[in-house]
Structures are given as C-alpha cells and as structure tokens.
Length: 77
Image 1 (cartoon, rainbow, N blue to C red):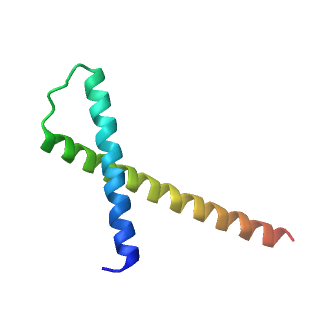
Image 2: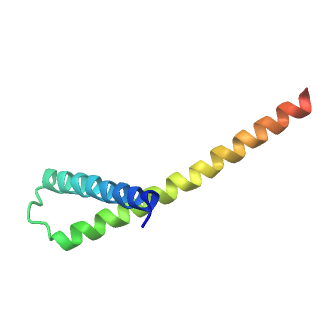
C-alpha cells in the first residue's frame, strides 16, 4: 500500500468517525442512549457514502460550470 492509499484510508476512517459522533450526538439528544454499535457503524458508513456522492456530483457541476464560463468568455473576446 503506497502513501496515497494510506492517506485515503486514514481520511475515510476520520470521515466515518465524525459521522458516527454526529449520529451518537443526534440520537442522544433524542433520548436514545442505548445504541447498538453495529447499527451506529452502518449508519455512519451510509452517511459518509451519501455525503461523498453528493460532493462528487456537485463537484462535477462546478467543473462543468467553470468550463462553460471560460468557453463563453473566449467566444466573447
């Protein structure tokens, strides 16, 4: 495993830990303190996957928008 793969794995772990903390906090605010650890891990993993899908989709929209803007500016020069 190269350094890039190690960093990617580390970041994914941190994302999951953050999502898990947020889920724990939200559930404890709702009075649900006895949370199954396996369910919490699965929920955190789903949240991270969904968040990454959204970021990836929005990133493509931004890049295509910038490309269209540059193309439009080149045509107007």
